Length: 220
Image (cartoon, rainbow, N blue to C red; front, side, top):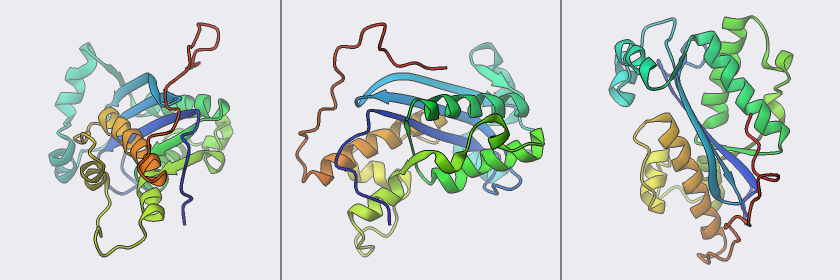
C-alpha cells in the first residue's frame, strides 16, 4: 500500500500524457505535460505535442480532442515533435528532475504514462531508457490514486478514484484531458491530500521562501 504523505516534498513535478490509445505496448503519447513545484509553488511548466506514427483511436480522440490535423496546426504556436523527438525530450526532462531529487506526481503514472514512455523508447529508438541514464525504477513517484487509497482504503463510499473523481472530491478544477492541465491537477490534488492527512489543518509550509537567481529551480 502507498504511504501517506504528511509533508510536501521540496521539489515535485506533475507529469501527464495524452495518447493515441490505451495499449501501452503499441500506442504513442501525442501530448506531454510537465509542471514543477518548488515548496508547493509552481515554478516551471512545459507542454509539447507529437505527430504520431499511427492513427489516433476514435475513442481517444473523443476524450482529448486531438487529431492529426490539429496536431499539425499547433506547429505555429507550440512545440511539435516527431515521435523520436518527443521521446527524447520527455526522457530529458524526467532525467533532469530525477537528478535534482524531485518526486514525480501523476495519476496512474507508473502503469500508464511512464510505462508507455519506456516501451515506446525501446520500440522506436531501439534502446532502453537506462541507456540514456534514466532508470525509471529509481524515480520517486507519488501516484495520487494510490495515495488516495492509502488515505481512505474503504471502497464502499468512493469506489471510483480516477483523476476526475479526485478533482471533484478535493475541490480541484479538472484538467479536462489536456496533458499540462491534468499534470497541474494531479499536483493540486496531492497538495489537498496532504492537508487531509494533517486532519484538514493547512499547517504546512507550502510557501516558497525568497528565491534568488542563484538558488532558483534549475530546469534543463
